[in-house]
Amino acid sequence: MKVAVLDITGKDTGRKVELSNEVFGIEPNDHAIYLDVKQYLANQRQGTHKAKERGEITGSTRKIKKQKGTGTARAGSIKSPVFRGGGRIFGPRPRNYSFKLNKNLKRLARKSALSIQAKDNNLVVVEDFNFETPKTKEFVKVLKALELDASKSLFVLGNENKNVYLSSRNIQNSKVVSATGVNTYNVLNAKKVVIAESTLEGIESNLSK
Image: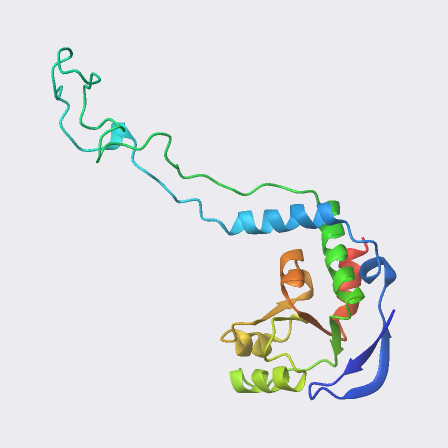
């Protein structure tokens, strides 16, 4: 598959790059995508939720009423979960939601996500660019030139593009990552995936192993 290379003003440079069919042209594996996205979202959870159970509630331990003769169920503690203000039955406890996936499955999921975006013509290849200083205004100009200011976008740039990354942090619908930071969730969550020309080789080498 060949894709035209654009400059940051959105104009065609007249050059085209060949995308590897091994990375951008495979048959997507939906289950691999599901597992990788599930792991990514699970890893975002803090797992710090906690509810007090009856043993952790502050309250009197006296028997609140006599055992028999009241016509109602027996009750021994005001901290019982059946009373208002009592402990919670089987409440949430702090836990770690993360789980492991093998590297080959994660690699397959990322290739599947990139292949879906390539098939839908949602991949944009641009010339390498950088800013002299971090300026959000400059990054907004790039978004408008590429007609991405009204939609979610993912920029995959080289590691040396620190100023571009800093310029993008205040933009809600745009995210900048390096070739090694590409993940299935971010690729599929974006309407357009913008890849720097020099980064293509790094993506293909990382995912072709």
